[in-house]
Image 1 (cartoon, helix red, strand yellow):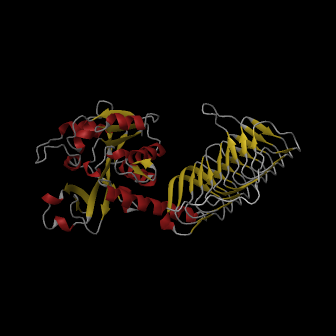
Image 2: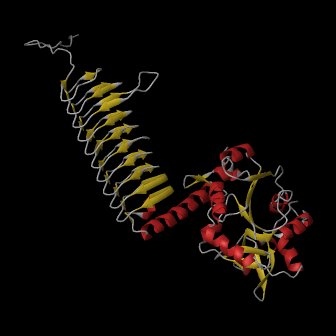
Image 3: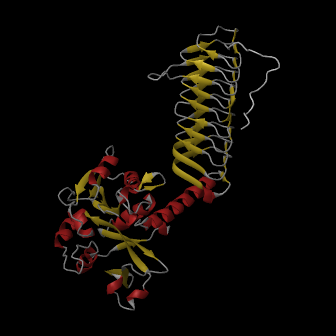
Length: 454
C-alpha cells in the first residue's frame, strides 16, 4: 500500500513572537519542519504533501531541494480544512499519515507501528496517557474500542477523569479522506473544520479505530512558544546523549552536550562538558574533545587530543594530533598525523604534513606545509593582497622563526630556515637561511625624555 505523508505547516506561531514562521524555528540546528520531513523520508513515503500558509515563500524556499508537493492554505480554518485543501492532489488509493510541522520528534518506529495497526481498519491514531489531561481532547472508549474524542470544555465530569488524550496524529486511507473531508462542518463556536470529526464518521460506519501510544511522550509534543521549544530541545539532546553513551562514548556531563547534526564515533571517545557538534562529524578511536569545543562538519582520526575551547569548521584531522587550546581550524584545513596546533593558531585552506608544528599565535591561510616543519610563534602567511588570495608553499623540515611574515605567493624550500622577525617576499632555496630585518641602531647612555614640570 502506497504511503502519503501530509504535514500541516500553515500556522503563524504568534506566541513565538518572531518574524520567522513557527515551523522554521530551529531545534538541534534544524527547522522544526525539517525534522518532520526527515522522518517522512525515512518512511519511504511515495509523496510528501506540505500545507503552507503564513510565511509561505520563506518556508518553501527553505526546503527547495526537497521533493515535496506544496499546497497552500490561504485561510486557516482548522485542521480539517487544512487536510481538505490537499484533496485535489491526494491520490485516491493508498494511505496517509497526517503529521504536524510543529511536532518535530515523532519517531520513525512509532509511525511504522501506526501504519501497521491501521492497515486493516483504514483509520488509526496515536493517543497518549498522561497524568494531567487538562485542556486535551479525551479518548472515550467502550469495551476498549474508541467511540469518540471529547474536547475538554465539552467533557462531563466523568469524562474529564479520562487520562488518555488525542495527539492529533492520524493514519487514514485516502479513499476515506476523499469521502469524509467534504462532509466536515464548521457549525461550532470557532467556525472551524475539525479533523477530529472523522473519528465520529468512522464510528458511525462501524469501523474500528486502531490506536498506538509512543514510547516517549516527547514524540508527540508540539511547540507553541519558546519555553516549549527549549524544553523539547533538552529532551531531544538527552536522547541523543543516551544513544552516544550506548555506543561507548564517555560524556562528562550528558546534560551539557549538544548534537546538532550527525556524529559517527569509534571506540573510547571522550567528550568533556559544553561541547557542540554541528553538521556531519566523525571521531575516531580514542579521540578526546576538551571542554567548550565546537565541531562542525569535521573528521578527526584516532588518537587525537583536542584541548578546550577549540573551534573546527570543515576540517580533516589526522591521527595522534595535538590541537589547542583556543585553536581554530577553518574550512579546508587538512592536518596529517602527529601534527601539533597550539593555542591561538588559526588554519584555513591549508594542508599540514606529518609531524609539523605551529604551537603559538600563528595564522596559516592558503598554504601547504610539508612534513617535520616548525612554524614559530607570531608567524603569518600574508595570503590576501586586497583583491585576490595567493598561496604559500613551505617544504619539509623547514624552520620559520618567530614573528615572521611570509608574503604570498612565495615558496620556502625544504630544509630552509627563516630568521625571526623576517618579512619574506621572495622564494627561499632549499637548506638556505633567509632573514630580512632593518638595521639595529644603538645609542649609548641614552636619556629618555622627562615630563615637563608645570
